[in-house]
Image (cartoon, rainbow, N blue to C red; front, side):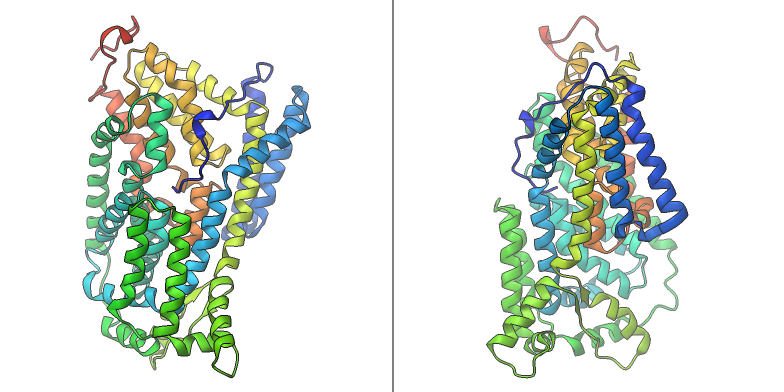
Length: 506
């Protein structure tokens, strides 16, 4: 995920000794019950249009009532909500810039050009596995699953549409590769945050993560290769017909690849992702004026082609819905490409921003009343064995991803709560840091109202329920870390006098 420039090491964990575990679970049970009713019985896939946002606020109200009964002041809850919202400032700004980027990358022809050449390279049989590999490489280079989705991820979804490959499958492959890189890249903020919480160093943490991450990505690739061979490729439309329609609508050129390459290069060079996305937007705007002046003129809605119409056409692409009609005589191909030649600009991100704000309100109140600490402590006390310690860490990360709706808190809270427990068991801190990443980082995208789930769903244009079964790397990672713990595979002990008397029998 992208850095939000918050020092998470200094975040305090709020404990409330008067709050018992049953009281802490009341808001969670209420939220899950209300969301289940809202999604399953009433709104279905339209639940994220606004009703789920209000359900999150109702969940926060239930948590506040529990807090009032346990002597937590209204002011302290509001203060914690404010801190939560502050921590999402970077994410919200990036969402807005991704909307702007998507609009300009469409009208400039960058995304259509990626699709045009991608159809030549990516065979339907190996397409899903190739998505995993491509996104893994980009994510390792940039340290960001968010940037990966916003650049190559969008293009791969477009190519999948032309190849008649399910968008949910493609999004799952994209996210599997993106989160592989996000976990292992030294440029990733979560990869730096997890060892900081556990008390180990960055590269020890990365080397230790390879033990569970490499088998997981291998299994993921095998599954996608099998899916690729099992997909029915008969009756697919001629790829050349799609390329002809794209070429007839846009002035495609390899020179347009310069913009995404420069954006990725800036992020690799540790330029702020927000700055890189802004530069990518401005460069794409310039490319649109050079390569697609007719489309820019059409987007302006003005009759005369001059500076004002050029400005308005670009600004419309950045801020509001942009739709470009494909030039083709084939109605079927035109209909499919019409869905690819659309972007919502910054305005299209407002629903996701609204969701994040409401989720942070719920998470902030839960933290303020001490519920997060109470739930984590109860889970910690439930297990005495080494495997139980790993299992409780995994469950805690998942619970906080669901309740606090924030990937960082899913690393920070369990990291601080469990550090001493791992030491008391004679376990090296990299056991904890690896488990935090295997269960906290990668599962955040599987929760629709989590900041990561909301972001990737909006960016890729695929709802979480559709890609969840295919985000194989993401949901397999927690199981892999538990398998290693259960069979005591490469579970590193503390050395020397640092370990406690209670040792791990390997």
